[in-house]
Image 1 (cartoon, rainbow, N blue to C red):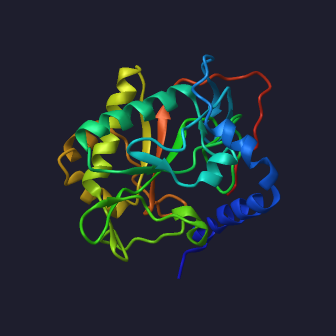
Image 2 (image 1 turned 30 degrees about the vertical axis):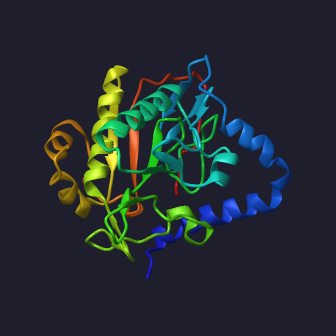
Length: 257
């Protein structure tokens, strides 16, 4: 039986399904926005990932040579915006992965709104610095495949991997996961930035640290040690370390769920 906390992610599917039915006429315009290139104006973040907002957010591209979004609908609805520097870091990491993990494919998940603020059901993702990445997986033949997300499983967020990182014929590719985090950290450093926090199901950390990049990740990245409000078995959450502004009179109600 799913935990109560995990069931809250059913809200994501309901939101996307409702939006699909009610906004069909606006999908073309939404798709155009999702394909916009990184703006000349640099984004500005305010507050924190849990209590903030974003100015001039940038939408991540729906797909590239070795990656894709968790949902074309989610992109169209504007749920994949980030800070412009975060977009540059993510893009650079994917380009590097074409060289260091050429046979792997990756999927990113939800990020945030163009102007930040609360995006249900997430507790953070409020100022353009939070990004969900879906677990890279191998099929029964050991071939890298996108996580099989669709409306029936809340675009991947309702998939439950077992203690060994298996779901049906799929298993988590911990080596690819470690390489992605490694490249994200290197890409962030080229911009003079870093990764503030990585959230992944704690029992999986030992498997992650057993990979070739494991020692580097243990030394240079900060992982949440306790349990998050949901398990983080089908995706890993990354908060990027960028300076954000404080704004006089800026008040955002703190999330309670």
